[in-house]
Length: 213
Image (cartoon, rainbow, N blue to C red):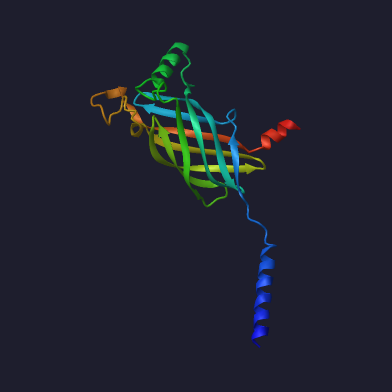
């Protein structure tokens, strides 16, 4: 009797083990390398008398996806690539950008790059919609940032768009801030500025394979 019970138990174990061998493996997380030629960040800063806006380039970076679901990523921003697209006068444009790169703002001589690293991704109600949280580092100072993002995966390519609002004073950029300087009137610059993310990435090896054909 005990022998039959033992054999039955052994058979059950073998059947379970055999069945598990035929279970389809889960999708693995894949790395997508950012295309720096197609990816760009658009910034917008406002003051009492108006606004300025422009672009800044992504130096390098990658996104992590599990199937079509965003799971992580990071990128480095080239702060010396910052431009203003609203100023048409070449002389004033150059003066403005020079000021943006100075110690009053981003101090690009000392801090030539900024970084962003995703720490949490929460799926939204609709497919491809997420709430992204990450560590934004500017001038060596890191703060958590949360913003909505949309992800569109198509084969070996993925596109991510989103818009984040940053408080510049949290990164020691206080020039023209009413939070620190009184009686500056219409020379005041608002603390918050926005960064619109437009990132395009390809799965590692996909771009190389395509060029080799």
